[in-house]
Length: 378
Image (cartoon, rainbow, N blue to C red; front, side, top):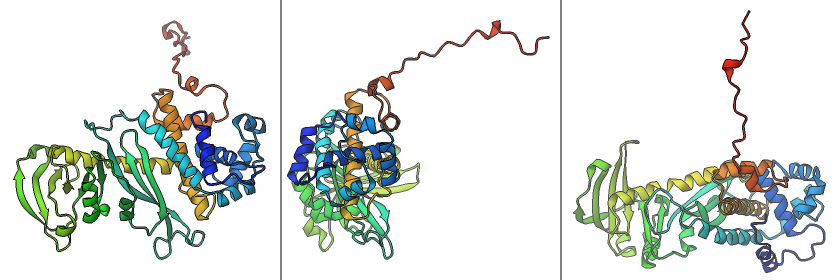
């Protein structure tokens, strides 16, 4: 927790007046309890209460001044503004991104590359009527823009399951010169043209119904899977007006999966094979979603209200980024998974984190077996 700027946390609390009339259980107490639940993967509020009450002497040194109880924590999650922890996560993201600015992600590009996608978390529609999805199902959708250098989320929006993914494109502030890699769910040419006007680049897959006219083709190396590299113009009734500029169409055959892909981009400078590899790097965001669902507590919730669910998700994201910050600043070579697991089982240890990861190789050398008596010697 020393890697979290406490002054910035207090600014987030003051911004939304979340600390008004609180006497016993502060927002900082709530953050510490919920962060402990994420790091140690607690199953319920009663589980959190039981574990923290088992070590009362250590709570004070950690910074928890309030009395930890299930009802108090439930009320805090229910009523304290979730935007406090959303802003805190953004503060941590602002700290983490420069630390991972030079992190490799599998491609030799100087530009920033983002992956845009969304994942859903199922909830009970009867308990969470504010989160409709299907006819008899509820879901929470987490829209995420991921910086592939370090896999740091730079934008997150939490909505109900029926929210259209395209809505996110209206909220993003595009960075000139950066690449935005997205799947076919985000193909909306009017929005993509606005992205193009900002000087940013996109790479996406073309829909089968996309109508266009080829203007000219460039030679490709078929040995690496490329099949075509063309400059095209959209010819659809509406798309020719909503995206009046030229586009680049790259066709690629993946021999490993026996699938053919058609990519659309507004970048005409990168090699065609790099465009295909850029789209392949989009898989990193799928790995990110799988990672946080497996190792953080966001697949089931401690409360059912919209405020409680968003509070829990934002605190989980904040913990993920905080762990990434600690790992980078301590220069620990272990994977993020290993780091999280070790922190989880040593949450109340007083020894420095770095000391836990030091590889001393102090194992005693095995004795010379040749000098040992045989068990079967007679």
